[in-house]
Each structure stands twice: as C-alpha cells, then as structure tokens.
Length: 184
Length: 154
Image 1 (tube, rainbow over the protein chains, first blue to last red):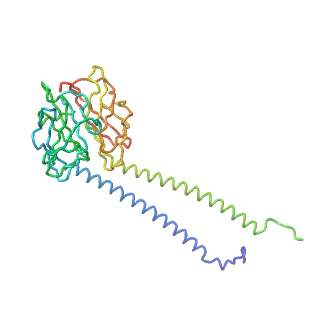
Image 2 (spheres, chains in turn brown, red):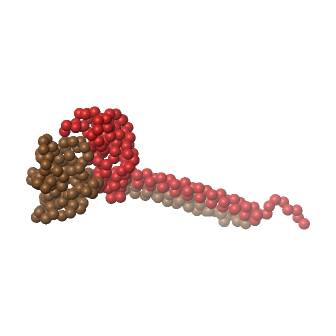
Image 3 (cartoon, one colour):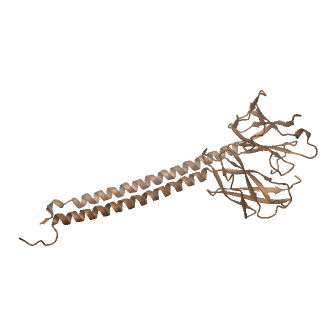
C-alpha cells in the first residue's frame, strides 16, 4: 500500500524516533527547570549565609572609651574610643546630639557638611575626618568635635557623640558623663 | 480530458504545510513570550528576595523639628547599612503607636552608609513624658522599630 509515495514498510520505527525526540525534549526541559531551581536555591542560601555572617560581624563589633572625654577651652569635645572587637571597624558617621534638649542634633558629618570633626591618630597628629575612618582591632582613635559655645555652657547640660559603623553599630559617648546615653 | 476532482496532492500538502507552519510559528512565539515573561517575573522575584535579605537600616535618632508648643512634627534619622553598596532603602510607611503617620517624601530614599533625616507628622499631639513606638517600613517590607521617650526636661 502506498500513502503519498511512502510505503508503510518504510515508516516502521519513525514513531519511535519521534517519541524519543519528545522524550529527550521533556528531559531537557525538566533538567533546565531543575538546574534553574537548584541555582536559585543555592543563590538564596548564599545570600542568607552572607547576611548571617554580616550580622555576626555586627554583633562582634565593640568599642570602649579609651579615656574620659575632655572639653577644650576652644569649644572642642575630644573623645578617644578603642576598638575592642576582633575585626577592624569602619566609622562612617559621627553624630553630635544635644542631650539636654530633644532638638536637632548639632551635626551628622554626612548631612551637615559644616560640622567640624578632626581625627587624631595614635601619635596625636590631626587628620581630616574622611569616612570611613578605620580603627584596627585593639587600637584607638581620638575625635575632636567642634561644638560652638560648648565651653561656655552652664547648668545641667549634656552632649552625646554617636559613632556609627558601616555594619550599623551605634556607639554612644556622653559628656560630661560618659555613661550618659539616653535615647536621643 | 479527465475532470478535476478535488485538489491535487501537492496543493493539499502545501496547504497543510503552510497552515501547520503558521500555527507552529504562532504557538512558538506565544509560548516563547509567555515563558520569557514567566522567567523574568521569577528572576525579578528572586532579585527582590535577595535585596530584601540584604537590606538593613536603623533609626539612629529622633528629634523635634521645633520647640513650639503644639508642634507635632518629629524628625527621624535613618542609617542605611545594607550589605550591598548599591542598595538604596526607600521608606514607604511610618507608624507611630500603631497609627500611620504622614511623612515628607524628600529624603525618603536613603543611600548606603548615609544618615538621612525624614520629617514625620505625628497622628496625634505630642505629649510630654510620653513614649512613642515608631515603626519605619521600607518598600521591600523591611521594618525597624524605635522606642522614643519624649521628655523635654531631659
């Protein structure tokens, strides 16, 4: 018997080839979906693992004041802080708050460019405050914050310096009482 | 001459071939478009989840905008410390004591490693020696809460 010029005898096995091609196609699509989902899951796991490490690093960041804050007669508040954490800390921002009032902070370096903060290295040499200021583990840095009129303050007044790191740690030092750290 | 009955095999085959080809091309383009859209949606969803996991921000301080009595505006200082240098935090909602508060749209996008102020109008009058529970929520659904005790006498 002839159908459009091809004998039935010659068509034997064609169905199996087509079936095989479909089977391969289904397997290929299945493998692609599988590999895509595995890749997506691995990627998510990697991100979560990164963030866990990031949060652990943050929780390990710790500071202490190296010496009691001092007030100079030319309106500078000088604070030395020591990094007591296991890794270098990057100070990215310093905030100066008037703790007596609940009014605007005097300055945040990255918001109020007129703020005047100088960094002193371990030898006491002044440097421009260019964030991030890196404090190695175990070492300290001194910060001189200019607060106009602070040396003429009278009565019950307080200031607070906030040191913010790139991991989101907030370390606060109060003046005159360095233990002072109420909610700003 | 023999009368022509129906179409010739060649024309019929060509017609079927054309119809099948056109339908095949249409089906292919529709399915490709649909699959590509699905893939894009899935990728953007994965990217969103990744960004959400990497997003970190914190309220580092709260202060008054004005000392005037009757003023019920405060200012929040927010730090973006996300684990991605290009990730910006966009503030979408602020709640004060579980009530939604209106806030200034300027500075609602916070760059990485930047402390940025955002003005908030409290939903009720500011009361001295009162505690305010402030919740800031970003567009990715990440929240940060802060408890602010307002005591003008320090």
